[in-house]
Length: 237
Image (tube, rainbow, N blue to C red; front, side, top):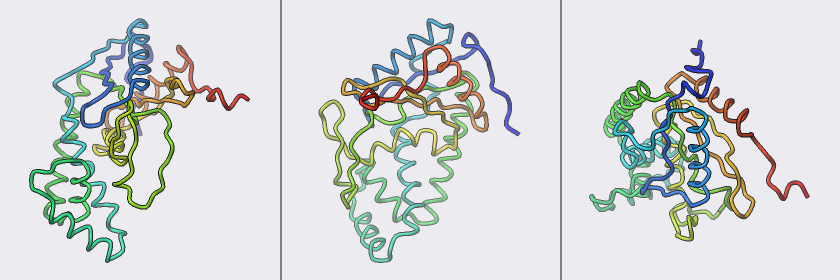
């Protein structure tokens, strides 16, 4: 049975707020809604911090997440697709640590290397456990932009998404949901407003392992105090 939420009032919550990272930058609109939420929470009595040495390295955990994610997904690949990806992974430069390279390596991950990756995930879980001795929740992006046009072209690695006008590799967006997915942490996504073009923006509240009710309670308090879901303006026409 899951434990009760750690707190029931804003004044008792200790929250770490992260609005972007060089590995997967967020656009101006996303950062703006996160910063506005952080300011509102601070005014309501929440203890807010904007950085901490306890936070696991986002670049390292994102690379690990991409490897383990693709190791799982590639188990269903057709033999010819798998063979081609394996050959491509073998030809990667040793120093290429881009998220795209890690996805390719993940497809060809041996059982030995998967065990090493899993050990890395165990260490990551221990880091998060230490962090949640100081904080009750982490508020961070769930995606780097507002709602975006989906690209269904065949090769995902050639797809691009624009963040503040600059192109980024489409699948790299998975780094933000991966922050909770890889260590198995509960995450509650909440709406935080709209981009200038009227498209919705959200963030995630990440909580301690098995303490799902803590981010849910914080989300409930935020909705009660600042408002929750509202249909995008164009839906009201």
